[in-house]
Length: 228
Length: 228
Image (tube, each protein chain N blue to C red):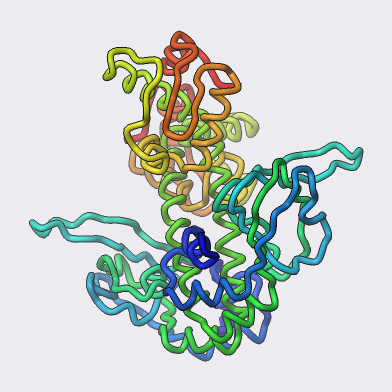
């Protein structure tokens, strides 16, 4: 397959014009990495990002004792190191080919130059990422609405208990931290709090929580009750 | 608060340099939208995107019967219409202020011009979106690993049943479609299939599935067994 056609099939570059794929093909470096070879090391200057065309690439950190902690295994179509490259940071981890892998390397200077001459490439990439983000946020919300209300109820009951069963108390973490703690995103947490209010289980204002129906929260925490 | 400081606090623009915030402040249009006023309509040219500074904005479609279908309610810090603007499409829905809301409007032509002169603004936005995407993909995976293996097992058993309990059959949808059907993303589906193989429950190759342990799949589908 021609380089340009390969690039067309990379999700990060969806929806570009033919001419823009050709421009990307002009700056790409087509590489075959043998099994076991390191692609980049933690702390290396992020001189460009990679997209896996075939094979598998392991991204990992090393503990102070030298133990390997795998962050992710990347396969066909997935970009590697792009966050560090876009942000102008160093690579935060190691990348090594798990098997013979073909990767496309996009050097940062040429890529920046391309975007400067052709802002619509960047706009299209922003569109692709924004759209995926919307979709993922929807998925997180759908999945969270099953699990998170129960965990949130358990957390609120715990906080109340720690304060001699107070019915009125303050969250001891920010809403962003609480969302992370519960395995969801702040937007979904806000919506769950709003639903709990609508069900008259709690009243919330900023970080202040008042428990209106302790029994209802207990039922929610053990899965005997669901939020509508 | 000064315009520039307001822009600094918008998540989409995290991590820019001071000068870049000032450049954005030069193109922004600061608007106060009264309650109930339409901000844009479906099919309108996407001439720019909005970021909510305060208040709440409802984004909705209308059914052929004129019934309102709310897609999302946006609050402080959240962008509206940016996908259509980045992709150069028309607005796919209506946006209306639910209460008096302050929004920042970024006109597309000025924004494109700014990126052309200053590609690092686009790179930084790509970094912000990529980083959030990574985080969301991790959340989707964490949440999916609880629910999706059981649903996938049930689906495979159903396919087998439809083919006279065949132990060897082909998926009737693409892996992307199957991921959507199960409420996850293709990357996570691949990992779950790999784990099922490792547990010797199935063997999969492309769209071809062989059932190695029907009882194990049945246990997984009713929640009596978990994937390690």
